[in-house]
Length: 454
Image (tube, rainbow, N blue to C red; front, side, top):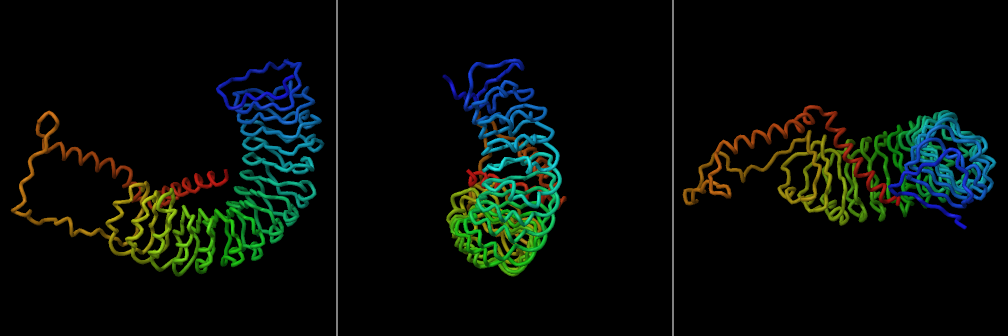
C-alpha cells in the first residue's frame, strides 16, 4: 500500500476535484510546487494517518480550515508561499505539530502564539500581516521552540523579557517589524542561540554587555535600528561568528581591535554609524572575510595597507568599503577577486593607484566625493611625438577598406552619451548614488548570507 506520495518540484499541474475522496490513506504527502490553485484540498480532511503535509509554493487561497488542526497524527505542516488569508485556527493548539511553516502568505490578526501547540520546535509566520505585540508570557506557549521567526509583519511593542526562557531556541528572527524599547538582557540566557536577527525593528539603547554569553552565535544582525554606545568587549567571546551586521545605527567610539580575532567571520558591516579614529590594521587577521563595509562613519585615517593581505579577498566575492581620510594604498590593487569597492564620501587624497586596472573581477567602483586625481605623466598631453617613432598606418577593416576618421568620432560620441546617461544622473544625484551603491552592497551581503545559512 502506498503511504508516501511526493510530486514536489516538477513541472506538473496538479488538479484536485473538490469532491474527490481517495481510498488511499497517506502518511507523507508532498505536493510542494505543484501549481495547485484554489482552496486547500478538502480530501486531506479524511487523511487521518497523515503525519507530514507539504503544500508550499502553490497558489492556494482562502482561509486555513479548522480541520487541519484536528488531524490526529499530523506532525509537520508547511503551507508557506501561498495566498492564504484570515486567522490561524485555534484548533491548531490541540494538534501534535512539531513543525509549522506559514510564512509568505497574507494571514492577519494578532500573532497566533496562544493557538500554537506546546510541542512546536519550528514556527515560521514571517512575511504575513500579523499585528499587535508579542505576548508577555511567550515561554509558556512555546517551551520547546528551536526555530522562531516573526519577521516582516506589523508587530509593535517591546520584546518580552520572557524570551530568555526559551532556552532551546537556536534561531530567533524578529526583523522588519515596528518594535520598540531595548534588547532585553534576558536574551543572553538563550545559551544555544546560533542566529539572532533583530534588524530594522526600531530598537533603542545599547547592546547588553552580557551578550557575550551567547557563545554559540554564528550570525548577529542588529542593523537598521537606533542602537548606540560602544561595542561591548564581551562580543569577542564569539568564536564561531560568521556574520556581524551593525549598519545604520548610532554606535560610536573606536572600531575595536578585538574584531580582528574572529577567524570564521565572513561578513562585517559597520556602515553608517559614528565610529571614530582609525581603521585597525588588526582587521587584516580576518582570514575568512569576504565582505567589509565600514563606510559613512567619522574615521579620519586612511586604509591600512595590511588589509591587502586578506587571503579570502584575493579569490572570492566581496564588498569592501571604508571611512574618511588618507591615501588609497596601492596594495588594495592586489585583491584580485574584488567585486565591489566603495570608498565614496571620504577625504581621500592623492592618486588612484594604477594597479586598479588589474582588478579584473571588479564590478562596482565608487570613488566619488573625494580629492583624488589621476597620474597624467603617461598621458604626455600636448607633447609632440618622438620624431624617431614611425607614423602609424591607418587602420583597415578585414576587407582592406580604410576606416573613416568620422567613424571614431561617432563611436566616441555614442559612448559618451550612453555613459553619462547613467553615470551622469548618479553623479548629480548624490542620494541616488548612495542608494545605488548600498543596493549593490546589500545584494552581495544577501547572497553570501544565503550561502552561509545553507
